[in-house]
Each structure stands twice: as structure tokens, then as C-alpha cells.
Length: 377
Image 1 (cartoon, rainbow, N blue to C red):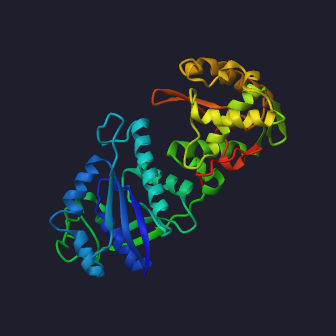
Image 2: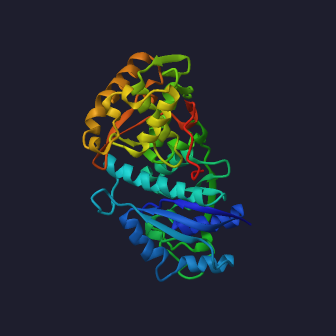
Image 3: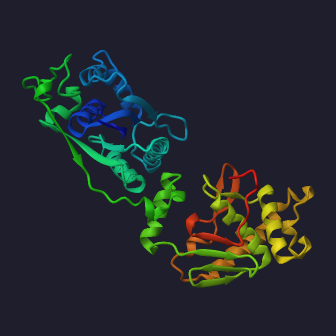
């Protein structure tokens, strides 16, 4: 039996979690070592009452399969920006909050193991959960990962009122049918796993676009509209920006800021955001550019005066440089389908104004490159 890990977002009935672990073992030869569950508020309560309650179906499942360490649970409850637990995903903000937690749970599983991650469709009547899981699979799935749907026969077995767990359950095996008819017996229930075909789009987006659900959706939409991004080259000496075959000439002031943004985009593990009043990172970029141009700092505008007395004024001094850079790129790349990947995006995050480039890092090149310090990898 091969090991795997499971990601699921149970709907109103958490009982299918045990049924899924059973079906993976009996029908696919897959031992679910870990099960990561993303839960809205009442789903967490049902989990405690049913799956972890007096009947202890998980304990019984481990006994039936002869594996006391099977299916270690990892629980993630979704909360809103207000701190309140999520109960309904009826509005876009709540739906996005759930999708983001699910996204981060999937990324965490993939980062922690090379084992297959089973993206399980257990949302039941909460069809939005099924959509969230399918989207996460399409955008994150590696070659070894699986998207599986759990099916019941008869259908009554999946109703929340049946509290069904798995066919070989010994204690509390008789459960109401949900229609007032005879009780169902556990051994009468048939389970099946269905492989759901879905495109794996991870390679189209690039790993740098996968840090957040929102970022991946934006990158996916951009890729669908424009096709793969061309190569972006920033030539410091010539003060030229090349996007594929399109060329834009920039001033020295503008090139320094653009290289600053590009360097942040190339840094591993981040999303490329640069505070507009950043000093420490900008000083390194400035030295690099001045060395290439063989010119003293006073040949640039006073926006690059990095002395301590300029700290409070730096955002105002850099603002016209940043504004002219955006104008030059918009004008020089007018009509280009990938222009929005190069014109810096602006946003206020954590009370601080920031900018970044959206182009994937593997399509971005600085010539000559910025050398990392000796103590950095």
C-alpha cells in the first residue's frame, strides 16, 4: 500500500471523511497518512459531534484497517477579516476567504511532501466548496496529485441524517434511511471513487504566481487572454526595456526604480511588492546602476538622495520618477497584449503604498544581473 495525503472541505456532513479514507485504502491501495480539512464553523461542530464523537468512527476505521496511525487530522477553520468564524460563503468576500484558506492548505501539503495529494470532493450540497477544490487542483496539481469524487449507493447513505461512515463499521452500523423506511446497515452501502479529469495548469502560471489564490486567478486570466508572457529584459547600460520585440527607452532615474522592482520580483519566496519609501534595497540597486554608468550620484535627481535627512521626503521625491516610468511604459508598449505585466501595479497594503511587476519571474532578466551578497544563496 502506498502513502498519500488528503485535502478535503466537507459540506454539511463530515462523515464522508471516514468513508473516503476507507475507499482509498480498499479500492486504491492508498494509505492516507494525513487528512487536512478546511471547515466552516458548523462543519467543525459536526465534526466533533459525529466523526470524533462517542461512536468514534475514526478509531473503528483504524482498527478495521489495522493501522492505528492512519489519517492524522489537521483542521483549518476559516475566519473573516473581522475575526468571526465563517458560516456562510454567500457573498464574494466570504467565498474568497474560504478559497484562500483552502489554497494555502493545499500549498502547505505540497510543500511538506512529495507524496500524492488527493484533492477530495466532499462538499455535498455546498457546491461552491466543490468548485473551490476543483480550481485549486487545476492551478496547483502536480503530476502525482489526484482529484477524486466519493460516490454512495444508495443515495440515502450520503444524507446528513444518516450519519454514515464506512461499510465495515461495527458499532452504530444501523442508521436511519432518511425517508422513514427501514434502517440502512453499513454493509449495504457501496462506495466508489471517481477520477475527475481536469487540466493541470500549474506550469502555465509559474510558481511565482501561486503564492495566493487571488494571484493565481489573476495570472490565469492574463495567460488565457494573452498567451504565454514574452521575455522582459532590462538593459541598464543602454537604459532600454525590451518586452519581446518591443523596445522602450527610459531615463536613468526611471531605470533605477524599474530595476528595483524587477529585483524584488526575482527574489525567492515573495510576491515582489516594494514599499515606495524603501531605502535599504534601493541603495544596493542605485550603487549597481551607478557603477555600470560610471557616474556619480548627483547626476541623478534628488529622489535618490539616500541620506538620513531625506527619509521623510523620499516618497514625495520618488513619486514623479515612478509616475514618469509608468507613463513611458504605457506609451512605449501601447497596444502590446502584455503591457499590464510590465507597467507597475500599485496598491496600499498594511497602510503602506507599494508597487510591483506582475510579469512571471522566469520571464524577467536584468542585464547585467544584480549579484546577491556572499551570505545569500
